[in-house]
Amino acid sequence: MTIKCDELSNDLLMDVAGRLVEPEVLDQVTTHLSGCLSCGERYLEVKQIRETTQIALRAMPAPALDARVIEVTGKVMALKRKTSRRRIVAWILVAAIAAAAVLAWALRS
Amino acid sequence: MLLVALENEQARAPSDDDLIRRCQKHEAEDREAFLTLYERYKGRIYSFALTLLRNPADAEDAVQETFRYIFTKLNAYKPQGKFKSFIFKIAHSISIDIIRKRGRQAPLPESFEQGFETAEKDRAAEVERLRACYARLPRVYREIMAMRVADELAYEEIAEVLGVPVGTVKSRIHHAVELLREMLKSVKKGAGLAPWEAAADEPDSGEDDKP
Image (cartoon, rainbow over all chains, first blue to last red; front, side):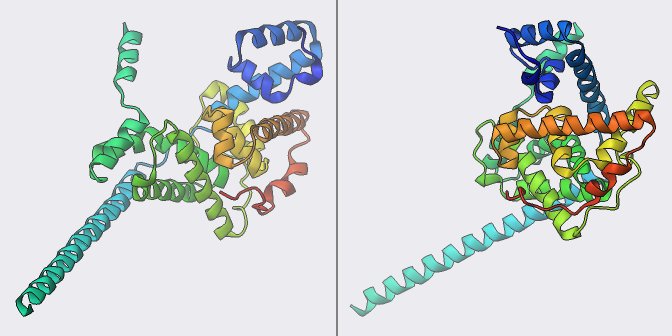
């Protein structure tokens, strides 16, 4: 099966450049590229865009961000603990009131 | 020998879902597991946010908010091997929120250098040229190129992050590359990037941004 020029979309060419396609698709595209000058040129441009993009869009945040994230998640954790403690206290209170009610009812009858 | 050692180390490294399970099991008190996740993703999420927001301070805010959100909603996440698309989806939503709050995109930078790593000397000019093009590329194309090329997310993962069909992802990549090719040709001819400045500086429509 042969592949035609209009079937070679840029996304497919980029996948071919990154070797992210099935071997048989790779074979078909490579065969087409070796015999088609305009697609071959486009492939080289796409390949270069892909390779340069991988370098161009690389970034690392400043080390100070680590401290910010640790602080923020620490606050979330403290809030979670507080909420959890409140929930426990609320349950104890409900249980105590229920027990008192049962006791009062038992004493009256 | 070194390769074998590296492979062994990779095999030993816990998966994202293992780390999430550890966090969930210990009621989010397993700081080490969470920090391992943070170290694993902070650079990728920062690069992604910086590509969208074009401003290092905003990108750092987006990273902080992303991890705060994940830490808060840890128990709601079901480990199914999709943590990568989950974290990118959150980072994307938060970045879009920042853009909306800002009202307009940040003033168009001369190039895309601020916040990004310095390229090696032999490729510096080429990288700078491409960054100048990226600075003028509409946001929908910048984000898709960042996810597919820089982070190598699968089409299905990108579709999940953006909430669009896989076909749309492919066609956006096709158009993004076409635009970049045109821009690079224009730069090489010495015609500059003026025709693309207006489009890149437009406020985001938000049409396809619904999380």
